[in-house]
Each structure stands twice: as structure tokens, then as C-alpha cells.
Length: 246
Ligand code: CAA
Image (tube, rainbow, N blue to C red; front, top):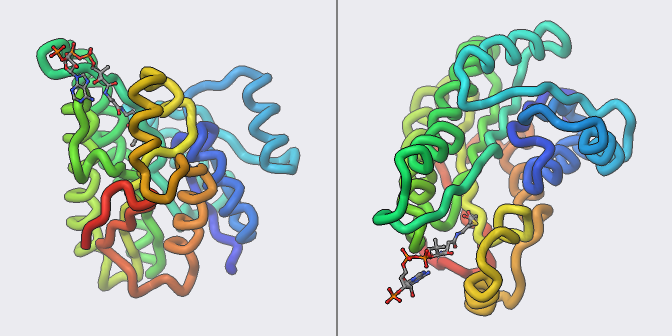
């Protein structure tokens, strides 16, 4: 695999970290971007990647100007970004009757606006060089909806629309754009669900277990491979059979 520069948003978090590990294994130059981290959290992150030189940049993906600044800095330091994984995501679960405007706005900003902010920094370069891999992390709940997630389900369904449209723009120029829809994966996000509700959801997963971050990371590795050039505009569900469709 060529030593291409890969940026992973939400790169220090549960899914992002496993994705960074998988891309490292493919010899990519991985730059994790995430909200500012404590020294301890960064140490943990670097250790989990098994090397001292895991690259990290602070970035708030909901802020367009921050994205412009940080992506310019990454390209100046490491070279053109050829792989972009949008894994940053938040939940602010509440039924619609209780949802505050700030819960709606925060989720739309981080889970959907961010795709516009980050992809716009890299798409021109990818198209002019004739190679790019963009992978957007959506969710099973963007396909099915979930009680208490009108904000999250709307944003994650929006991720699919964005992905399909950008796939058409990049297709003739070697840029593939795909989404992955994780089911329930063992991360801080799902550990925050009320325990009884969480247990009930896990009990309903046909393969009989909650997902592991590595289940998502290997799908990212597959879609970002140099020769994965005929898969674009797709969504790959990775959910243990939680939602089976075609
Ligand atoms: N399904 C059906 N009915 C539900 C329900 C559910 N999941 N949750 C609550 N209700 C019912 C209650 O039984 C109650 O009914 P009664 O009024 O008849 O007693 C009523 O709705 C309560 O409504 P509230 O507005 O008061 O809801 P709440 O505050 O009790 O619960 C909630 C809201 C905390 C969001 C809860 O519904 C919940 O935890 N839902 C699951 C959220 C979830 O799965 N989030 C996933 C986060 S991880 C993730 O998103 C990653 C990924 O991509 C998969």
C-alpha cells in the first residue's frame, strides 16, 4: 500500500482510534484530528497506536475556519491528504418533545456540517491528483431511526445523501466516497445509554454481541485501499444483523 496521508476526524475516540490503528498497519501516514486533548489522553492514544510518533492536531470539525487552518497545516507538514475518514460524532439524545434547540444544533454541526467543512478542504486536491478516498461514518440509526434521536438520525441519514452526491462529483477523477453505517459498537457513546435500554438493544443483535471498534476499522481499511476504486457512493452496514436490508 502506498504511504499516503490519511486524516481521521474524531481520531482519538473509540472508533477513530481503531481506524487510526488499521490505517497505520497499512503504512499510511495517519493524522488524528480531534478536540483538544489532555496530555494523559494523548499519551494513551500514542501508546495504543504502538508508536511514539502518532500525529495529532486539535480541531473542532464544526468550525469551518478551524478546518481550513488545520488542513492547510497538515498538508504543509505531511503532504496532500489522500484519505479522509469522517469519524467525529456526538449524540444529544432526547425525545423530540424534550429536545432543546442546542441539542439539535450541536448534533447537526458535528455530525453533518463537519462533512462540508472537511471534505471541502481536500476535494480539489484529490480530484486534481486523480486519487482520493473519503469515508464517512454514518449509523444504523440513520437508516432506521431511533427513539430519542431525531437529531442524530437526521444528521446520519444526511451523511448518506452527502456521500452519494459527492461520489458522483469525484467518480471520474479517481475519488471514491462511501459511508459505513455502524450498528451498536462498544464505545463511550453506547456506554452512555441507560443500562436497561442498552442491554435490551444488545439482546436484539442477531450475532449475539455488541460490535467492536475493530469491526468498523477493517471496513475503513477495505474501502480506503489503493485498489478499492470501483466502490463509490455505497453504504456498508456493519451491524451484526441489527438491521438487514439490501
Ligand atoms: N422505545 C419506545 N418507547 C420509549 C423508548 C424507546 N426506546 N424510550 C422511552 N420510551 C417511552 C417511555 O416508556 C415513556 O412512555 P410512557 O410515557 O408511556 O411511560 C415515554 O416514551 C417517555 O418519553 P420521554 O420523552 O420521557 O423519554 P425518556 O426521557 O424516558 O427517554 C431516551 C428518552 C433517554 C432518549 C430513551 O428513549 C433512550 O435512551 N433511547 C435510546 C437512545 C439510543 O439508542 N441512543 C443510541 C446512542 S449510541 C449511537 O447512537 C451510536 C450509533 O450510531 C448506533
